[in-house]
Length: 165
Ligand code: ADP
Ligand code: MG
Image (cartoon, rainbow, N blue to C red; front, top):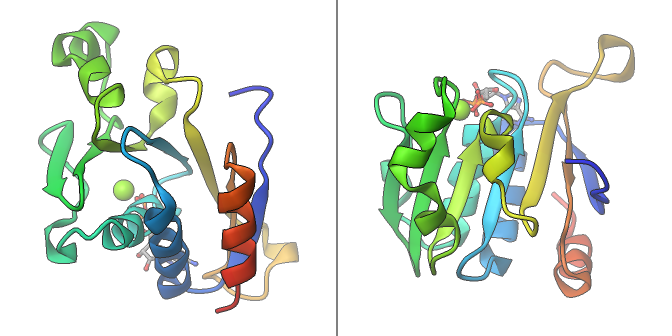
């Protein structure tokens, strides 16, 4: 994902804060949006997705990382596809799955481990990176540096304006 400008950046200090950020972002996502979440195991990708789903009107109890399937589908104001490609090995699996139909339809796709399917990611993907801060930079174990790129100017300013905890 070269040449992507990460236009929104912040540090969250708890899972609730990350989820709230997700919820705010979710409210602005348009049908057909594809969101990719980069970050190590335990970074907070699923936490963020729970928030995004909440913002999209999904019953939040339904949202868990798809561990035995590649995708979970939820019903929000539009269909929401939650992918986790952690265990995906070959591209054949992905092609067989017919991923493009999800990415280029009217639903909203939320992808954990998008780096596993890099070649198939759409150009207008919204990238979210979540990192634990290095010990010397953080005040607590729960600090996460989060950046969100490829936002439209209006969504970006709305996110900034609503800011706050
Ligand atoms: P991933 O999907 O990236 O593997 P999860 O979202 O499943 O990670 O888990 C993140 C874990 O980190 C949860 O146990 C959560 O409570 C914890 N956590 C601590 N601080 C934060 C934070 N600021 N944001 C998100 N999760 C956090
Ligand atoms: Mg996860």
